[in-house]
Length: 131
Image 1 (spheres, helix red, strand yellow):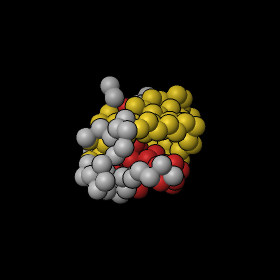
Image 2: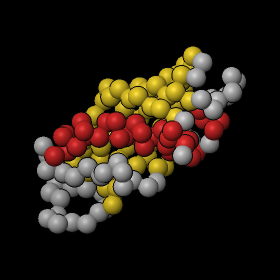
Image 3: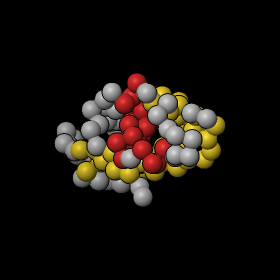
Image 4: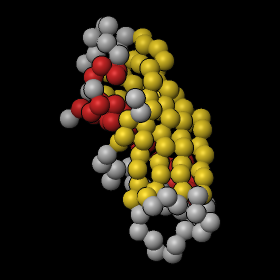
């Protein structure tokens, strides 16, 4: 599995929630859409410093959450002249999910205090990447 070769340590610097609906319907069923924007800031050998922004929205749109910060990825499989983006969408999706998982506790607590749900990072199957 790719995750064994790729280790990500994330540092959350921004967490913002926006309630779009005045009152979420009681017992409403909705899905979550996770969008990630990940950019390489610098590289030192196999370690890459990244800046990330992840948006999580419900569908139908009830609320939106934005998290952002910096992450360090240790990647053994990169050639000296490659960037993380060169490894493709599967790797970037894996990085986004690892970042989301490492920030899940703070995200869960922020949403729970507002009576909202946070999607389990182990159930998220699809990440939309910003280009």
